[in-house]
Image 1 (cartoon, rainbow, N blue to C red):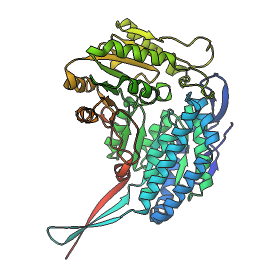
Image 2: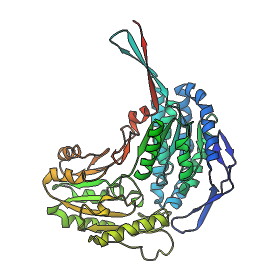
Image 3: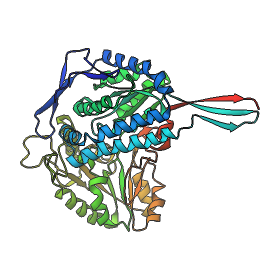
Image 4: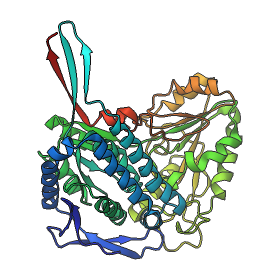
Length: 476
């Protein structure tokens, strides 16, 4: 696939610069396409297009906005056969999951927020101590959307769908690692017939991303990515008094209580702990086991991880593909080496799978005998590496161990008694937690505590983030 333009102001616009970026398959290390490299000048044009489009889009009826969002959902869905394979090659995501996460998820979010747009109440009258008050909602304005590579289309829609429903216009800055899949999203936008400038798509690196954050023409930033990058964006937005939503890193815990149904947990590990080859911010990469069951849990987790089928993400049988690039593999291997130096014990994996000379593969790896202070237990590795840690002290000790982290994004609690699990879940300082399951819910808020983020996406809370409010005081 070769792309030569950006989607700006409803048209395919030639880039300001001449540099191109090759896209490399994570499985074969072969080039599969190329696309232009964005410059700050391209961002400037896109922001101006979004500003020019804002008044008309804001004033368009919510019903009309909803209709265009639903059309976009249809145009994305019919591209499933294209999107899945491209994401699989760019990221290493197993094919079926690549399509589900980057098509079915966005389709559900667009349709959900389209329904919210149809029911939107712009003016709410409230009783006041004197007279009456009308609370008026206005779209926050032009939104800069910055998304990472791990779910290149899926994560766009956590932000785009509520922004469009609220009446905002958007500049989307996808990651350069997944530029090709972002073009398939842009193709769907182009076909859907949005007014020029409402959605602009400009893949680029950190330099153009920071320019978008700093831009005076951008009213809000919505970002998903690392905690380090989120802190930088938060600093810039704070200095400008610019609203920002940050969905950042995680080191979530799967908490197994004494009565945990171990077989059910093991059957769910592929989704709960290892989604997208471990390249998912909410993955439960810390497994907390009661000391009395520690050896059994280590054995069961080890057997599960050693049994995953590692291979080409385009092959239907593959359960774990490669990681996104050589930089990611080097970082993961660095953590594995550090874990060994610190005294942890590898029970499976720890290297590269046999017979995979090409591709950025890392064998599914489990560490036992892990101290909570080790870097492998505290830092986000973002790959197929799990740590199993013992705890004591019953349910209170389990909650304490889960909270022993700077992060608070996801998590699960496993118990034969759902109410017992729920009681422990309420003690965990995290934005989302499941009891014997974990599935994001488009109708409920998703966001991080502590170093995992600021603000919420999904649900009514996700829509509220794209409004600004005016209280209008009226006489009786």
